[in-house]
Length: 513
Image (cartoon, rainbow, N blue to C red; front, top):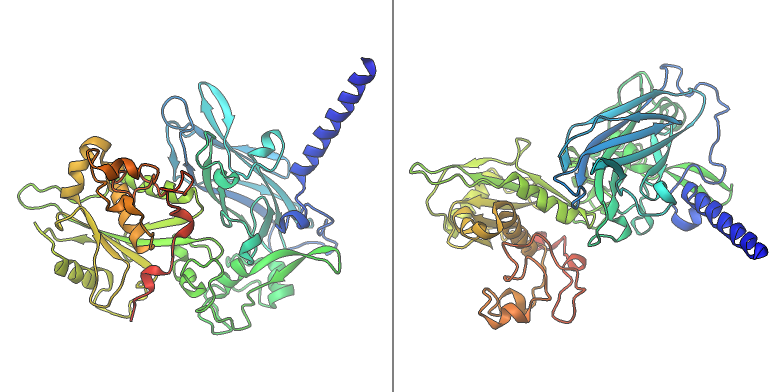
């Protein structure tokens, strides 16, 4: 028995050490994820001070936190963040009883100016029943807490990071959740009871001229002046400025010939790229359009959907304003976020989100006029056409929702009517009802091919189609519309339909003349 115990102990210790090794290192052969801690990627710099103009500091900024599922057993989440920079820990305050945090928080550390690599760890915690529990931000490739924590190496020469989050322009092997975006659903736990959360973050360093292009890159790679702010500069005349090409066109890759990690310039800001035809993530937005939408957080290597939401004012005789509930917008975002599709709903002052004068009825021909006046703003060459879908919220357009044809054959415009949706919201609640119908109509512009559950006498429980098409669990199915904010993944048998994996991102552009 003593011998057996020793063997068991040796095996367990071996498994434990192997697990630690896996959590610390992701090799290029496994992931091609440019993890700077693997192999011998550029140890301490032998070049001395990496930036003689400033004393280098690194800042990790948590920009947004979202609970993709119910995290806390009682009420909403009680989040706090722990960031470790070069072994020094920083802890945020606790955001009590909030599932969505839009309050930026940052941690800054003065780092050695002569050492190229900075190690960074990010952990998200929730206080649940008085105890801290770590939330899932990762793809579960690790051991113990590292299963959920995010480990990164920040490179002071290039101002880019690698590890559990990275840039890689070859999307097939890339980071599905995107650069600066962490998603606990990356381990395919979308419908499992895990503490899956979403986080947007950024890592920056001090930069003398304020253009966010570090001294080393300017001097050794771009040969620009590190004391002159280069924001907006477009030397190659391809319509995309140097800062965008630097951020999205620079990454760490493994060089098999030199057996080392090297800095690669994929988009050279001094060499013309036809960004108007490049669409590496196949989301129907070319790189030039990704640049135009960068103010809303687009990523050229991860799918984005942009929707402009215009809403109708309240009526003079007490008719309620057609206002989309804020909680409904969160439900919409969560549904797409779980599949790493970022839904950007422009309902604000940056070009969209206008208030439309009240009208007791809005027939189709009036919807077309609203489309021309409030979306195109009188210009048929408005750049937003073909980039943004247009989802109107009016008081009453006869039906709860539908896609309406425009005079220029644009297939990206639809409406939902508050008067009609509110009748169904009595049961499911306004946030769910509005989000479900809005997502239903958006699904038409994404060319979801509907099986019989959409119109085969499936509106009500006393109709046979209601029961026949129950496996098709999607807001596209009339039997779930108003009550479900999700598309189906096709996993429920022959009468189901895989909406998520058959979305056509180009469909709404198909008929533009």
